[in-house]
View 1: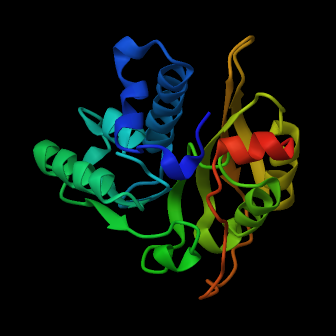
View 2 (view 1 turned 120 degrees about the horizontal axis):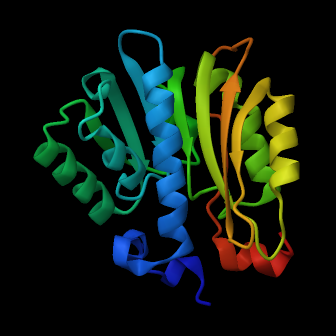
Length: 224
């Protein structure tokens, strides 16, 4: 497998297409189901959503079309690949989602969320399997300053070659979260979690480093 630096992260998104039959497509469907349910259950009014390492925004755009709460969503999708941010902007314009916007930036820098935190919904999808477990725990520990009390987090993690979900779930517990749902299809390669942050929240800390994106191949080499 090639190192993440050599991957074409724009073409990589073809793995999410319906005809791909990939575990990523199956995972996306679970994420979209949980996100749709989450938006329905959000308190009335504006719903602040943030996504780190957002890719092309498949999880969110796959939900907003026809969703009763779509007009309430105010979303910031943070992504480093400029082709992916351009695709986010194209999709938002095509769908008339004027309050869904991209930010081309390093999502490992918490300052990218300084203008929107604390949010109602935080998406950590496709990233926890590309950062070290220490960085994953550091990111989860920052939830009190990123998510409002009562807000939710949707997260994913590949469970091969090592299943790190017990450690991740413990980190969410330690951060003040309660598990609302956890999906781990038998024999498949992914897990998806839905957490509710029950607080208390904390003040935003400028300059806080969350993680460095190292890629799954390096994690596998490290035994993570």
